[in-house]
Picture 1 (cartoon, rainbow, N blue to C red):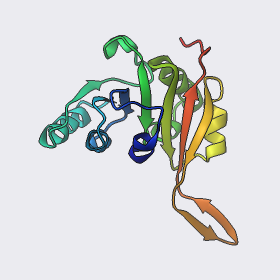
Picture 2: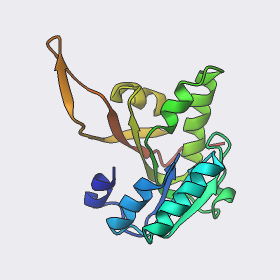
Picture 3: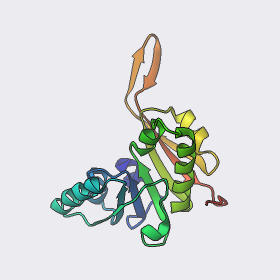
Length: 178
């Protein structure tokens, strides 16, 4: 993710970036090392935000960290202006595995992420539970596929596959989000 963003000619170093489910803040630190400066992280768990604060502070990284449930997140919880880029390295997977009403929660996640992004903003997702094609279908109402970030592949039973899928999706400029 960070490498793709660094090489992208469309993402400025001062782009407003939100790491959804930021956990310990490692991706925020990597993005800062690559020169990105407007970094935000969110997690539903206060302990994760506390840890991310410790990690980013120890690395000299300035990131704005917010406790928020992505399913109900609103721009007003951040600073009111939309994000240029949102990243996810497992939050959608965790929501997908929720035993209670996971289909509704997945749809709410897609709507929520779309509502946080600027028109034509980028959403980069890494999943170990969904194929690239499945992710494209699930995010299709609001997003269009722009790129697939290669991952190591394996061969088993004469077939080649990947253990993870990482996609770059772009929000449609005419998306209407709740």
